[in-house]
Length: 201
Image 1 (cartoon, rainbow, N blue to C red):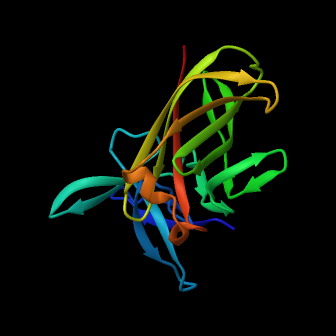
Image 2 (cartoon, rainbow, N blue to C red; image 1 turned 180 degrees about the vertical axis):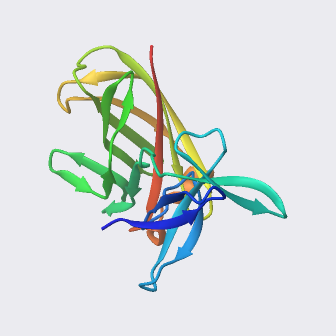
């Protein structure tokens, strides 16, 4: 059952503002302690946002945000897995480790990541694009720690469709840097936002 804040406006009208149980990465929230002793969240936005309410939140005494009704596309998350000396995520044939939740769209087509795996120093990436079995893509793949906002990226160029995996496949090497640091035993089981920016060549 959805939870709401009930706000009485100056004209004595009542406005209900929906609360969410968990915060999505990339958005600002205002915590609300509910009567059942559970903290839920109201989404903050700009006054020009769609679904903005009349309730302002002040920051340092200045009107800064309005509460808005939550209407977001959830982020895609990668859960770091490990298989022998490989880290990341794979769901290709018999090789299955880690996890990915969600898909994203490109030109109104659903894109599904089926592998993002690191075997020092090689990093591989594979994606399926709904209805496409030919052509070439470039992709920039970024992992983001939602708690610290630490980011690391790698670029794949000239990804062609490979019939054996039914996906567009790319590879690169990684010797150091922010992304390299994500692939470690201490991070296995952690959940990261994965962002994929692709372009057809």
